[in-house]
Amino acid sequence: MKGFIKKDLLLIKANLKSLVIILLLFAFLTLKGEFELTFIVPLIGVMLFISTFSYDEYNHWDAYAISLPHGRQNVIKGKYISAIILMFILIIICFLLSLTSYFLTRQPVNDIYFIKQQINQLLVGLFSISLIISVMFPLIIKFGATNGQIWLFVITFILIGGFGILSQYIDFGRLDNILKPFNPYRFVLIPLITIILLGISYLISKKLYQKKEF
Image (cartoon, rainbow, N blue to C red; front, top):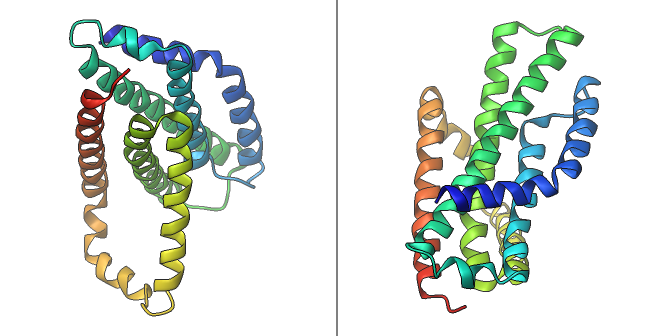
């Protein structure tokens, strides 16, 4: 399985220049206090990671990979582990850059408050990106790299449209009051929900891949 993880990370390395340029651009905006890195850069990293599915598809990698011992299981396991490794690395880098920006500019905010705020943003970013991975990977495995991304946009559009319609009939402000008692436990609940989401997504992806013909 280490070979599968290494292969995906090496494919990402091919696009590393693009990621570094994006990171430098947003780092500059963060230092000027015009942008927040914690979410957007890891998201871009995940989108770059999705390109590994396109490379695999183009080079017929899966037909070779499934011929290896435990190939079908290790391909999926390797994809998820590689994506999680990349996600954590980028989120930590963005968190450190945000801290650097704060201490360089000495913004008029209490240090402890700022660090807590950054950790909250990190957790939200972690959850959001994990949600994207959890939805997108099964779609790509089921429909292919190109069609899977189209399906993601369709589902996102439907969800946004549905949310807009529901907001006319439901007061979502009450939801914040319902969730307030859980705020002290968010540092445990968000990682736990993230693990559950990724776990369910992995099981779905594994099942889809087991049935897929190459």
